[in-house]
Image (cartoon, rainbow, N blue to C red; front, side, top):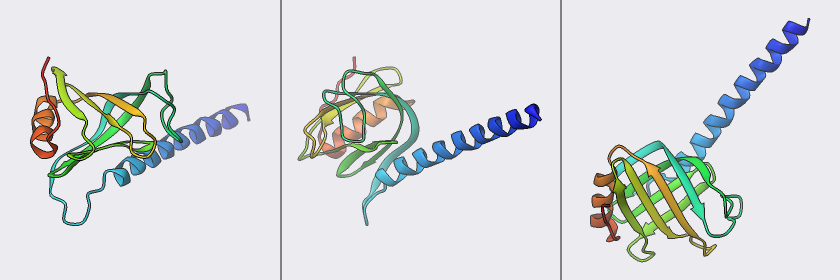
Length: 148
């Protein structure tokens, strides 16, 4: 009887973990959905990242801690969207500014101001095509770009 209970608890934990992962993935995908007629240049999904904020965000990352997360990116001709399981973290446009740069092999750093909450957000992402992302963002939304 104990083995059946243990197997049931273990099975429920696995199903719950899978369900939570799928929910988080759907939140990320909804947050980077392109607008009607928006021309998408680059997309990436499920990238490993560290998110740093200078103040706690409502229902989001906490200030003063390293927030590890999975990130989805969407770059169109007019904007760069960055989302985690908390929803949209950043939206960089020519008007809002921000920076996108490659700081080394497979390392992309995106910084900007969170709209509505006034928090500075820095996202360090492990990305196979970091230099391509930085170059494309510079051309699409006129952000600063530098390679270290």
